Image (cartoon, rainbow, N blue to C red; front, top):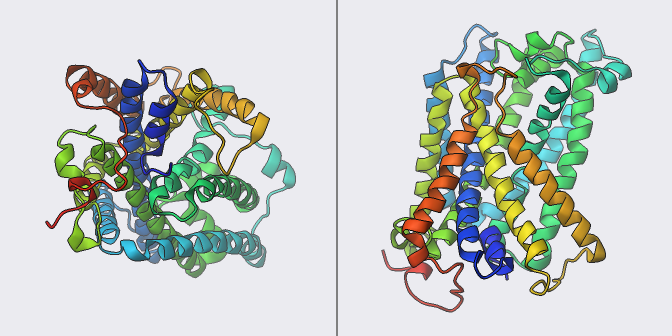
Length: 426
């Protein structure tokens, strides 16, 4: 059954009778926060990239303040909300163009960086450096630093479930959605490996100089060192545009998940938020505005310091991974008789995949809570992920026990049903 609220729907479907409502309730909240966290992290990345373009144009003689960074972030989120509301009809074309642009950008980067470095007489790092060199720039021990380095690739593929939340609007969703997940993660892995290998080949071995670039963006410094000012400007403009449309996709996914959750009566003021507008091609306008508002509030973290800003990335990981782990675990524990293979099925291999996924996701959730510095972190190293996600998970459970258990009955089938959830004249 294709549904925009896929993860909490599957949790409810597979869980035991006693647990299906509370577990699906917490999963729905966690998934909504995870997707909104994805919006925050991508749009924060967009803001740093856009401002790095300005810095490159001024030869590194200008650095954006945190209020300017936050203002740019807010503008990006608001524009995403407007596009998600008024341009929904062309979203499939926008997303297709984004995919093509992403692949094209990777290929162009892979070709341009080593050629530019060689033409400019720069040093190409050896294969030993690329594949065998490690450098610990944190206060954590070497082994744990290696584990924490997983967070970047984990975040990169962390929104692979976006297509799940568009399943109600997809053709042949039973097959298209799982293939979309596989292609998304698979291409990220392949293209990411190639990209990182080439970046490691051309990067300045003085990593502190790259990380503390006057441009405010390490990738901008890498482009600048290899291609010069004009080349860096050109590539960073394209990177920024691609990043912008990635954020747009997350706004759409987050609004669809949260709208489905409100349709099932799980959010406070659900009757208000589940409204869809006939005037704007049946779009969940109020929920899009809610996603934008929450993203703007969470973005205030970037006004504190860099450690607080990093929580925008890890809260997306923790929220989404818990939302994925619970339905998979429910399928293993309770759902043996309820599971019926669909068009896409991995056969006998599905159980080992599920067990591996549960162990991996549990580990990543713990990993995402660690501060940037340790093992004796200072208050400045605080990872706000545990505060935000922990408060949401605990708050959802308290809200369920105190009130929502009286009204929440799990995902409701509304196909063919009239009423407010399918639109009104307002």
